[in-house]
Length: 402
Image (tube, rainbow, N blue to C red; front, side, top):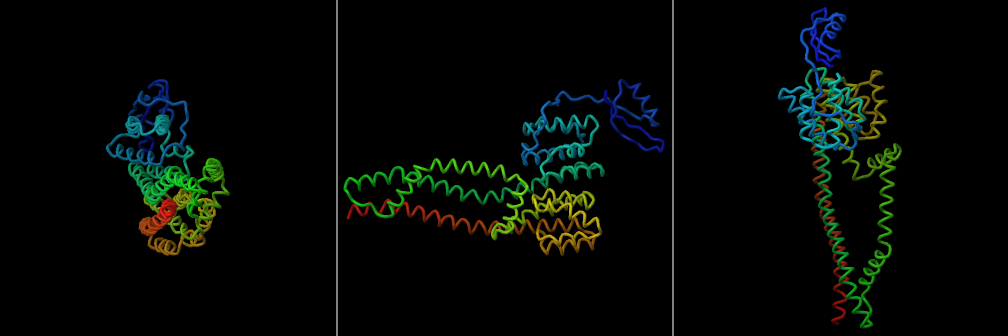
């Protein structure tokens, strides 16, 4: 049987922990042998509402929005006065997702066995972008404030989701226009143009050049379109497989940093995650080196992840944070200057919060400018294609009349 016990040591300090014994008498003897005095105890039993799952959780299948909802619900329930195990039971009733339910089951069983929440998260093979969770939870456990720790986890994940949604929103409108243009093209070349071409063949007349070109393109797509589609699928599948390789990840990231249009967006995206997470960890009293290591690993940048050990080593050798970061091109001059100021004034958490807001506003401005540029360009491009298709229909009709 498992018991949650409160004891006094020889110095009069109160200790709480979970221990196992066959019965309460055995437990009392065990505590006396350890030199403690038993104050109170309660027997722990596994709740029937949470069952032990034989299947291990597939962490990669838990979506980011589900992590956000889990952290939000945890901070609400802990804030209302529930214990961690009771909060997990309540969240389990919501049934956010199947994989998250399995994760909650495992977490509940580990806690009832005496493990800490941060220990369980450390054992789990979380995605690199979620490595910060265990650090925040460990700081929350040391300070006795897991509620704030879960709230900060929720805020960080929620900000990342909002940032991702902003970027995805830019592509929705052009994608809709592109799909409509393709549908219009297929309709013209499959129904309208063949009928016009048959009329010209019956009259032994020559089709206009623009109509010939469109029909040749349509014929080519009829013959090889399916083949091209399968080739594209194979190439896409190969790309999805090899993009997980370390060398390919580094190559793609270097490509992003050197692409004239993409580099500013990508750099701001990385810096928003890095500065925001570092600020949250430092505010939660996580040591600078640990906070920096977690922020670098969870920034989403493979280059920063590979350089993280070197950066930490330089700071351990006596270099300042601003001096060390200035050696890497991923950290711009404004960040270095403000970090140096934060070191002098002992206000690094506030400095990194300000930097996150600055880069967030800068990215929002860039996205608005990009949207205002992309939409007209897409309209012009689609307008040009549709104009060619309409001319391919109208020109032969006018030629027939003359």
